[in-house]
Image 1 (cartoon, rainbow, N blue to C red):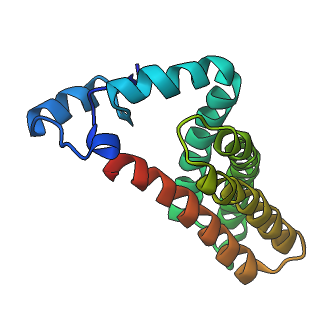
Image 2: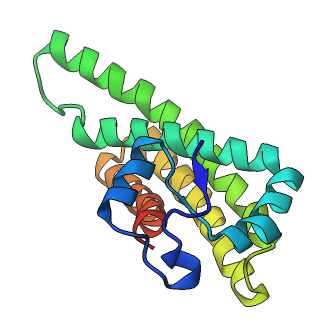
Length: 176
């Protein structure tokens, strides 16, 4: 599974894992979440049992959001192209955009309770982390509003902002 208390324990304890071979072995197993054993037993597992549907919805939404966002960022629709080719590319971009919007909203809305009611976060950081979920949903809605009003440049800027903040939280989990 994706949770291994030995992997990346430096996030919580400051200790590095026991070498590059151990890192590769764990990544091949799909184990990439960062928890020390005592943190896992005391905080993560009870919180997971209490909020397991929220965690699952968040991870599912984040995974779909990441794939759809990477696709649309990599292949933006042409503004001016041959009629047949441009229509298909714009249609695919729109489809992936709706997927991104739905999955991103699911990801963002679940950040709020996960952060605010977290057992492992200090009380002073719960509200700021919860506000990231509010910003996530708000920036998605702003980007959607801009494209519905045919403001392509503003839409693109807000989508890049949304993707950058969401992808930044992924990098924090990987590199601690």
